[in-house]
Length: 392
Image (cartoon, rainbow, N blue to C red):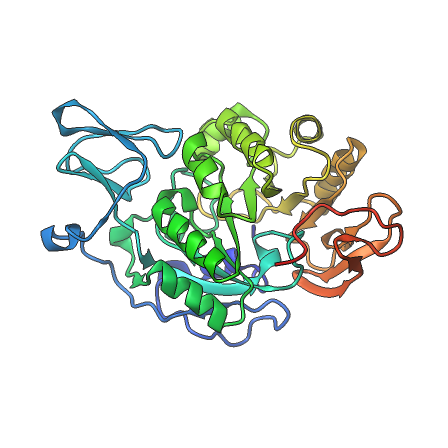
């Protein structure tokens, strides 16, 4: 996801190695889509926690103890077996004396206020302010990651600010936010922090959501979904080769995650970044959209976003608009009701239309909501119920 003036992920990319400098109120951003970053973060790496610091670390919620003081992390599908004093693939869960601990609990790399549409989450109280929380690292190694300055660093590569879950909820309330999201880096790797923040947010009457690559194990997923109002899942491609070669992962677990979210009746939106030569064939979009309709329903919004060159894929061109429009047309032809084109400011596919009568329901100029004709979650013209979360 890109677009320099309006997309927070591209904004962080543009900061480059200075992504961890002071992130205060920024001047000169597009007023319609400006992000508020809080608080100021200092530069320079943080030291690895010493023995005294480790005594206050948060024990992980999902792991199995093994022989020879090893542990198996059960949080995501990698099921890392971790020797003592080592971390798993995600870099942020460490085996200390035969117990698994989170190295990022309570340590936010940043807090950021955006329109909720930037997750992207279009069918949840359109236009409201959302507080996004993120830490360090990821359990994928995507070659096209726009947030690689954050997602491909361990906790020693940043200087975080400490916030309790209750403090996060309080900040959201005081700043006028109606929701808290967990995004930018993969929230699975800071699961315990996300879980406690979501519980605190619910108690404060806030909506809760997270944006994930979908590589979380079923048990922790179902447990955190009890406190979530919505989830945005990156379905990076509909091809095992892409997942293996580009993200160092597998497709099937992500499909399982999508099914579980629907089974738990939590609002779901899907986003796919269309990358030239890698996942942009109309045949792949055809298979993907048919799978979505058959397995999780035609009402689930699908965001087809434009790629721009970044990280390890700078040799590829931006996605042609014609490719995105063809993909969106195929998805609609296959029965999906809500198909959006992202990272193309001014395109009319940012807006929401009634799938029954075609009425314009939520009009958007990029991520800014300029009109809302929904009536209690229904089309104001024909009365059709529209999939989404339309009230606190």
